Image (cartoon, rainbow, N blue to C red; front, side):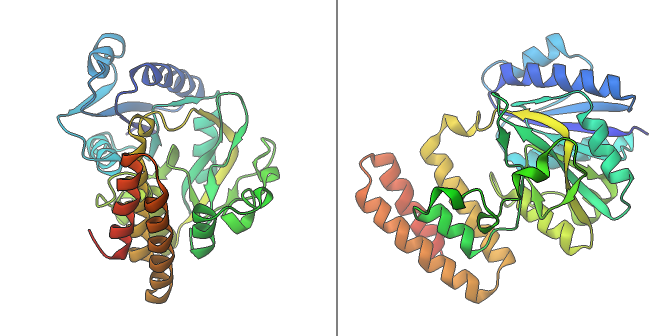
Length: 304
């Protein structure tokens, strides 16, 4: 039995991954926790697997020949880690740097709260600025922020699903949230087993929201842990295909709304998104984005 199984899913981010592994290995060693690391590589072409074999022979590597998606790859890692009987799964993005004490703070949060099933870290950007890492479940109000220009001061508010910045101060206690950002999630192994892990129908984006929703519906609490600081550079994989990423994001949002919202809310959201996306397609100058917006409208209208 081990305390923590670290699961990292990578795709063409070799250099970030090397730094990520160095930081998490150091923190795990200093924490006194027992653990092992699994890297699930989704068919990278940048030499990621060779780097792991050369520099990190102690890391378990699952080299996929294709890219099954973020959620499916994390599920692969968790299944592989079961043989070690880990108490917790620490799901970590490769474009992160774990700061000293972060993993222990996350584990302590769950150990001190019997009803807590999942926890997320306090994320900061590479320059030290706070990155919102905890959110309310998305509804119609959040769609308005995504689709229309609204006053800048409101984007950081509870109206847009954000928690107050003062909650994230490193000296504050963990606070209950709806869901963490998927860049950093500590989950009890028994909660992962009972809730089924990620829904693999979500290829990329929103999978952590869906899983958190199911964890909450199962009666578990979820927390953000301000004392657990992790640097998250953000978007290094998705930045490689911006137009495609926009389609993936809105496809996943459509799946999420169909799965978790009432028929009335879904109907209102569908009308709102299709109307705006058609207008964006008509105005777009770049063919890739014109096609992307049209595809999003089709998806929300009822397409696959």
